[in-house]
Length: 201
Image (cartoon, helix red, strand yellow):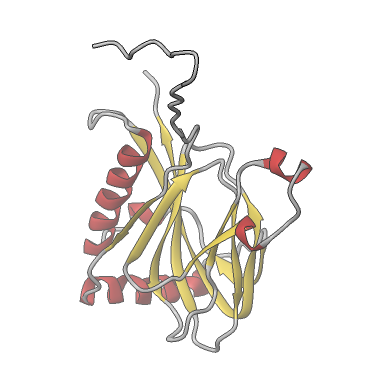
């Protein structure tokens, strides 16, 4: 059925609003258990034999990016969750070859991470093992539209904050700039950050 033609004294206007190029964010809360506690303790134990990597962070410690190869039950689950997040974000099929790497980050009081992006991967994210009892050290996701600065002043909407809690896994496109707000608590904040790339034949 076609719409009636406009008459001289009337004109029907119909419009639609469409969001172009939305930024997909994946989030899930996983159960904590003795297995995740064992993983946290293993990370802390291995710190003594591992060289600290602190690029981009202050009052924090990064581990080697080999955590997903550790033979622990919690790592088996984490590998599955990361794969599910990557496939959900990219819309890729379940047979898509993925390559993931992950490293632990332990933030002390005052620790933070500068806003950055990962341009050598497709999907990035973080899984939280231990956090402060009060909201602190939020994950900050930056507005990805640089052209907006030409017409709009900076405001509170420039950063979207995610409050961490144990068991939370959040993932996003690697090009999305992100950082960590200051962790203002004596309780250590322990998380596992990860990157995923899509393998090509």
